[in-house]
Image (cartoon, rainbow, N blue to C red; front, side, top):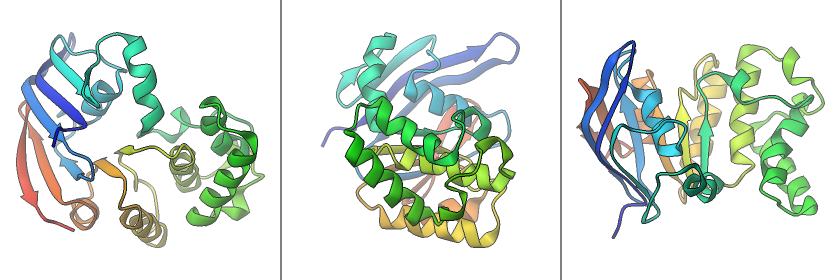
Length: 223
């Protein structure tokens, strides 16, 4: 079986911070539920951005769904199948209301309007945010914004979820609800960056440690 995402000999650096990745390799297979842990500044978010094409490595190859991706046009189709949750929810929410934010992604993918309505209803119900539907996104609390940001990627019905600190700012009850939802979506491939080791330990079947520019397998068979 071929990996659906393959990072091969990736080197990446920031001018002000120096080398972040040094000959990094990673293979993600369909159905994998991968957690990434590491210190602040180790490059966890940068890794997600490279997979999505928001950042380009100086060296190495990014191969997604069997295709080498280099140019922006190469990532256009990729982003239809990958849902990226940003670490800062304000980067994800830009429509006036919660309902419009959740509908934006599906509409942008040219999903039929009737299906968009159904998907929005399903997502709102699953995440338990019916009471937020008509709220202005800008007036939400930090935790409420996090829930809505998660809803915006669920509504796009992706094959792969890249989640950057999904439970930051959430109370225990909401964290448990998200955990149950992620576990129930067993057809999805998950790649989760989190400082909350207990969370990824329950969700993931592989956990990697990102340290000194490389990934090391930390734990398997966690779920």
